[in-house]
Amino acid sequence: MGFREEKDAMGTVRVPASAYYGSQTQRAVENFPIGRMRFPLGAIRALILIKRCAARINRQLGLLKANLAAAIDQAAAEALDGRMDEQFVVGVFQTGSGTSSNMNVNEVLACRANEILTGDKSGKSPVHPNDHVNLGQSSNDVIPSAIHVAALTELNGGLVPALNGLRQALADKAEAFAHIPKIGRTHLQDAVPMTLGQEFSGYARQIELAGRRVDALSADLSELALGGTAVGTGLNAHPEFASRTIAAIAEQTGLGFREAVNHFAAQAAQDAVVESSGTLKTVAVSLAKTANDIRWLASGPRCGLGEINLPALQPGSSIMPGKVNPVIPEAVLQVAAQVIGNDAAITIGGQGGIFELNVMLPLIAHNLLQSIELLTSAARVFTEKCVRGITANRETCEGYIEKSLALVTGLVPKIGYDKAAEIAQKAHATGLTIRQILTQDKGLTEAEINTLFNIHANPD
Image 1 (cartoon, one colour):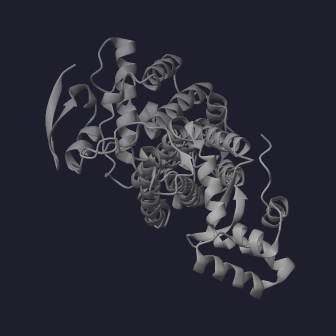
Image 2 (cartoon, helix red, strand yellow):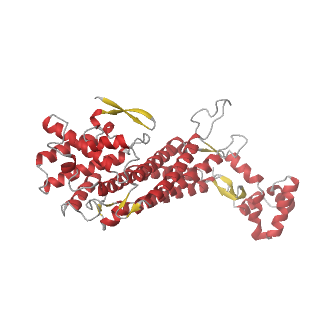
Image 3 (tube, helix red, strand yellow):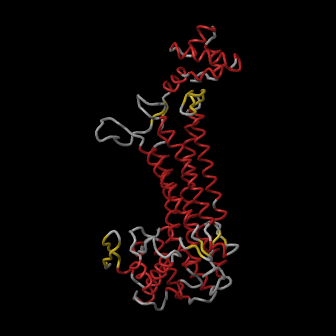
């Protein structure tokens, strides 16, 4: 395959010569030399799927000759297999409707279809990128549809299973640590006793709720703008084109896609995507909470909390031998920061709905699909490389309980707040534990003290 060199803002890049099938793609690459970030492949593949289903339906409707439809179908199948990935050359920062990327796909498929039919991939005959591959479509309805198809596909196939796996791993630890007593903490200060299992059960529930929030996004993301064409009126599209093509997309993906109730809203606004991004931000915050707590619980190993141990993945310092850092929790925290930043960009992008079209669609697509990919990877790595390998330090956990002054809270119902406070002050002044004072001054037995403190005996 031949290459040609193009200058962009980052320097010289080599672009496949075969990408320059038509003037529109060529102009897009030449006129928008802003960075090297390509329009996301997930959205490209969603576009290809739409084109494939559209060709089949247009053939059934008698609008596209059988041989042309079959060639487009075959070209799309090859593209979906990743054989043409290097030919989708348009960057993220392009025309706000995504027309450049839409035409890139149209031209790549038309070129390959012509090669299938004639052996010659140059020109626009017999398959034309606009008249045949783009038949019944506009960038203005296809790009929003592709964003929804790509997002929902990746949420269902990637993020939801990843969150379910993380939830299960945390739930398994909650069960394994159910009988390990430890001190709770509020305001970064000692609080009252709990179990390590209870702490992990909170993480598991938080991730379970994150998964439910993601599941709920399908209700709005399943609506597709396809069929509205230029401004939502459906100009130049067959009356049955949208419903039948969307049904074909639903069949291919196994997802419940349906035609938008109102095409004007579907093309003029991107509220479903803004909502989705907000949910992804919430998921990021949930992951950050869990990762940060686990990082702190494992701090030390000797001069921190040290209540749990994390798997050691790599040397943690280039200068301090033997140091091991919480690599995975820190990576998760960085992913959360990126997703939160992406949400800010998508929120601004959502404000780009001006009259009958949102003109920040490529930006929205890039950030949304990146957030889904990052969260999916982070959840999986967190599960496999960190959570599943966590072990507990029972003696450390129990030792903190004995040293905590907050244990007097369990005495309040029996002796009152003021007297309990006096015991805490005496323990602090003398360096004794609450247990020692109760044993010496009150004559209580170990069993009685454990009952007051709500500390259960080790069943082992």
